[in-house]
Structures are given as C-alpha cells and as structure tokens.
Length: 526
Image (tube, rainbow, N blue to C red; front, top):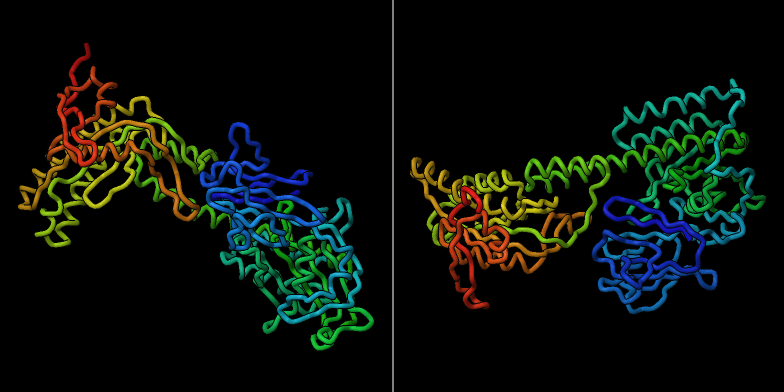
C-alpha cells in the first residue's frame, strides 16, 4: 500500500505491502502504522485505510476532529470506498492513497465516458510502443544520430530556460511549442499539471491556440502506469475521432522522484508520418525536465511562504532566540508543534487605559502605544523573552519558549524591572513634549503550559495554552501602576535573589490571593 501524506509543506511516503494501515498519533498500548505527529489535532488513533474485496476503504476510528473524504465528513459513517484521486483530510494533514490501476490494458478502458477538453470517446486505439518512465530514456554509449541533432538541442536548451523564465506556464508553453515543432508527426500538443490541493489535472499549455485535444483518460493512464506510450486510431474510428481528425498520438507522464506530477501529449490530424520510439524517448526526456521545473517552482513557492511566515513569527522573538531558530530552520530541524513544559509568563497592562484614551484623538492613542510598547518590547528582548501577543493595552510575554532557558525565572523578573524603568524613561520624554503619560502594572507567574508553533498551515503562531496564563493575568490585575507582583510559585524559586514583600490581592472568583510585591534584586546572596 502506497500512501502520501502532507503536513506543513512536508511530504512523507508510506510504502509497504499490507492489507490495512492505521493513521494517527501513537500512545502507550496503541500502535499506528503512519505517525501523524506533529499534527496535534490528530487522534490516537485517528483512521484506518484497508483493502478488501479488491477495493480500498477508509474508516474514521472515532477521532476527536473527524476525517474528511473529498471535503465531506465521514466520522460515524463506517467504512467508505476510496476512489482514485480522492483527497483525505485527517485534521491538518492531507492524505492521498495511490490506488493501482486494475484494468488489464489501455484498450479496455477507452470505451468508458472519457472526460476530455475536446470530447474524444477513444474507443478503438492500438498501442504501438510503451516505455517505462522510471527507466533511463537514452542508453549509455549509444552513438548520436545526426538526424536527431535538433531534438537533442532542445534537451540542452531547457535547463537554460529555467533561469530565464520566471513564469511556469510560459515555460510549459515553450516546451510544448518546441516539441510540436521538433517531432515530425506532431501537429498538436498539450501539457497538464496536477493541482496539489484538489488533485485535478489543470491544462497549463497547448498548441495550437484554440480548443486543445486531450484525452483525460489517457492522461490519467500514463500517470497511473508511469509509462509513456504511442497510440494510433483503430480501423473503425469513433465519431469524435473522425470530427477531430485524430490519427495518432503520444502520452507521457511528468515524473519526479517516483511521483507523477502531470502529463504531456502530442497528436496529429493528418496521418502520413508516424510517431517513432525515438520520438517517445525524446518526449519522455522533455517531460522529466518539465517535472523538474514544476517541482522547483513549487519548492520556491513553499520557501517564499515559509519565509514570510517565519518572518512574522520572528518579529516577536529576541535577537538571540531568533538566531537560534534561523539556524535550526537552515538545518531542517525547525518543526511545527507544541510541547508541555514549565515556563515563566509576564503580563503587563496600562492602568486606566479606557478612561485615558477616551479623551484622546486616535492618532495620539496610537503614538502613545507605540512609544511605550517599543520600549517595553526591547526590555523583554534584552532578557531573552518572547512577546506572545499584544492585545489593546496589554502585553503577554513568555520566558523559556520556544527555546528552553534554565535562567528563565530570573530573566523574567529582571525584564519586569527593566520594563518599569523603561516606562519611567518614556514618560519623562513625553512630559517634556507635553504629551499624555501612563503607568503599567505587571504580573509574573510560572507554570506548565503547552507552547510552541501551533495552528494550521496557513495560520501558524507561537503561542501558549494553559491555566498559568490566566493566573498571571490575575496577578497583573492586582498590581497598581508602577508595581510588579510575582506569584508565590515564582517567589519560591527566587527568594534568595529578589527583594520582595508579601501582600494579598482580591480576585473576582478566587477571593484573596497571596502575592509578592517586587522591589528589586538583592545585591548579594546569603
């Protein structure tokens, strides 16, 4: 059974002889054949793919988030039959089962309803030659045929075109135009590429302009079989063959690392000159180049998306942590997903912000926030903290995430002290300019949370999930302007290093809560 699965731009392949495969995340006592970690929304286990009665089947195993088949939820519907080309969604992972073709030959399948760009119910075709697309196209040591010099020049030229053409469709159009010009028997041609999401074959280029003649059945067959072939019309051509004057043609798959990315075809409408095996070999070689160009473009697009996403993520990180993550990404060790560990959380909030901003112009409020928040973010970054989010007048920062830090507790309280100093400095400058000033209260707490790069492929964010964030907000709410309150859990770890006094704050749901008012760091330890 051969299964491809994609998560966060990374494709993996499961290829083993078996009758059933379980997908999901493993846990003690539960075996999975395909481990979908780090997709945290996948269940343990999630779904099963099996083979029975000569068909492939998919079944959801009571997962939390369900399984989609062709965009429809199948949880609770039992075993459903899989068809060729159907896409399976297991949480944020896309799964594709490669179902082998069971028909005995090409002739037998051409009588079915053929979805074509120009309707061609090709009922009576004969196969003249067939070549495995995975084998070398030209044999080593074979002398060059002078009559094929023009064809070989195309092979030499194509790699240069990769650097010249930035648009993949333009490159594909050039390829098809040159193929039709070089192959003597070809009068028409087309190139199709499989859409990475819908798995639908998209027409990317064709010659001549107008309505292309493409058999979707033959295109699908050349991809499924991973073979290129030459065909010609039968003795009794169908009506569509007669109307479109289709006499013979060639179909080849676009192969890349064992995967068929699309198909290319040429045909003629005049008869006379026949396609040869040399023509088929040339077309296979050109198709390999086209597949290489398609995959190169896809990788470049993935890199651009990942770079944009990484850039957004890194804006909230200190330069030191940013460099570490970039280094990990460069070596392929940066992976999405969360982990549970103890971190230190800091929450700051402007005191009286609603009343303060109600009497100010919008531009003045934005200037106030920018003045203070830029200084506060710098103080956090200087102590290796990460700004998780800025919401209105509040900042949530975390220490010890995404990189572990044994000094996170001390760095967090030092960052809090630096933030209050930064507030005082900015306020002094704003007073001199006659601008409105403000103060903040800060709460700092430590606890176990789920943290890391969490979300979907399109919306990935560095975040923390857990009760510790809620408790930190309570300490922040209890801090007056200019104050820093730390939790007893944090004080237990830092009592030798901090100058703090015990106090109590009133909360809405928990009543009175013990806290420590931070005054500063001790100059020496006992």
